[in-house]
Image (cartoon, rainbow, N blue to C red; front, side, top):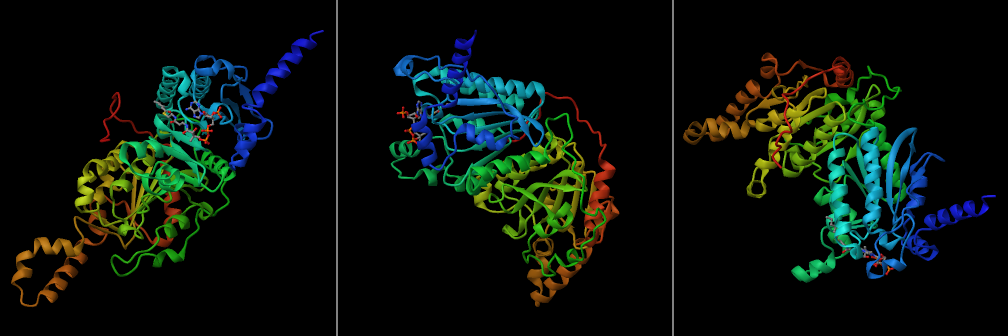
Length: 515
Ligand code: HXC
C-alpha cells in the first residue's frame, strides 16, 4: 500500500550513503584513504552506530551548488558504542565537495556536539576536508564559528578527540586545536593555517604539504599532534585505547579495570636506575613502566618535547596521568615546550578526575638566550599554574635532582601536592653543587692557590648538606623517603588513601593562566 513511500525512503538513503558517488569513493581509496562510513564501521562496536541527519540537504545554490545538492551535505554524524560506551561522532566525507564545511554540514556537526555536552558523552571528530566551502561564503565561516564555540563549551565537560584523516586547512585547524587530543596519520594528514601555494605567494618559499603540515612535523616540532598513526586502522585503535583511560565526562570517574598485576610487586632493578655520576643520562621510562600495572604506559606526545614524558597508565586498576622528567634529553630540564606539554596534560587530567603522578629528576629550567627570548618565563609559569590549580589527587616522587624553580614547579608540597615521596638518591637544592659553590664561595675559590681541591671540598660539603632528601623531609616537605624498589606499592597505597579526596578553590569565573 505504501510501497512508493518505502521506495522513496530507500532511494534517498542510498543517495545519502553513496556520498559523492562511486568514482569519488574509488578516488578516495586510490589515495589510500577510507571513506567516512568505512571509518565509522571500524570505530564503533558492530551494529551500534546510529546515523542522524542523513536527509539533510545542501541548501546553498550559488556558484553551481544548485546542481550539486547532496544528501548528508558532506558529513556523516551520529552516535554509537565504542567498547560499550556511548560516543557521539562526526566524520567529514571528502567525496562530497571535498568534505568542505557548509551551512548544513556545520548544523549537523553542532547538533552532535550539543547532544554530547547535554548527555555527557565524548565526541570524536574525523576530519577530511578542504575547509570552508568557498561557494557558501560567510555561511560556512559562521558554521566554523559555531563549531569553535561548542568546542570551547565542551572543553573540560566532555572529552573531545580528533582524528585528522586528510586535509585540514585554514581556520578549520582551530576546531581540532581546541579539542583535547589530535591523532594524525603519517603521510595522509595535513594541517596548516595557509597551504604551500599561499606560502609561495606570500613569502616566495617552496615547501611541500608534508614539510609544512604533515603528521611528522606536528608530532615532533609543533606539538599540534598528540599521536601519529601509521594508518587509519591504527588511528582508530588509538582512540579506543585513549577512551579506556578517560571518563565519559567531568562528573564521572575514569573507568576502573580489574587489575591483573600485584599491587605489592617490588622491582629490584629500581635500586640501580639512577647513575652514580651526576648528569649521566638514563631512561625514566624504566621507572614509569616498572611502577604501572602490567608495565604499560600509553604515552602522549611521544615525539614532541621528549625531555618530559607524559601519558596514561593504571595503578591497581585506576587510571592515572604520568608526568616525568626525562634525563635522556636535555638532562631532563624544563624548557618552553616541555612546560606547555606537561601543563596542558595536567589540566586535562584535572578536568577529568584523573589523579596525577609526577616522577622528578630535573636540574631546573633550561637557561639561555633562545629560551628567554621565546618566553620561558611566560611558558614555564604554565606548569606552576597547572599544578597549583589541579585538585585531583597529586602524588610526587623525586628520584634524582630537584633543583631551584623546577623543584617547586614539579609538583612540590608547596603547590599542594598531597603525598610527596623521595628516593634516597633525591637531591633537593636551590642550585646544583657546582653552580652553587661558584656563586657563594666565589672569593674563596678565586683566592685559593689550589682551586681544584678547594672546589672539591666545597662541593662535597654542599652535597652532603643539601644534595639529599633529608633536609626537605625534616621540614615535612617530603612525606617519606622510600626504598626505590618499593615504589609501586608505595604509589598505590598513596593513591588509595587519596581516592576520595575533595578539595575546592575560591570561586572565580576562571583563572588567567599565562598564555
Ligand atoms: C568547496 C572544495 C573545497 C572548498 C575542495 N573542494 N575544497 N569545494 N570549498 N574549500 C572541492 C574541489 O573543488 C573538488 O571538487 C573536490 O572538492 C576535491 O578537491 P580536489 O582539489 O580535487 O582534491 P585534492 O587534489 O585531493 O586536494 C584537496 C585539497 C584542495 C588540498 C583540500 O582541494 C584544496 O586546496 N582545497 C582548498 C583548501 C582551502 O584553501 N580551503 C579554504 C581554507 S580557509 P570537484 O567537483 O572539482 O571535484 C578555511 C577558513 C576556515 O577553511 C575559517 C574558519 C574560521
